[in-house]
Image (tube, rainbow, N blue to C red; front, side, top):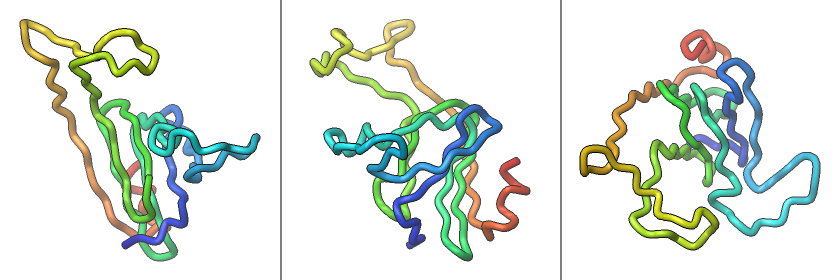
Length: 124
């Protein structure tokens, strides 16, 4: 129930954090044609949402895609897999496999809920 006001924060390179605003681009008028993929950004080590007295941070051990499609929510795309071409530009299925089986990703996510003023002590 964090009232994040369409704002979320992602790290761009493991060092610099950028504020993201859902369905908004600061340098041009954004037309919403892809409401999900248009709001996904690279997450190299952390993503968070916050309000005045709470911050919810997810730390990752690998690069992923992340978004906050609704206030109070964060979603991460660890690995995408399509068994058939979706005809959206790649021209082939995204079905990576090894030894006859689909790839399995095992990673770690650390969840932290804290005050915004002290949260950075943990995720840095």
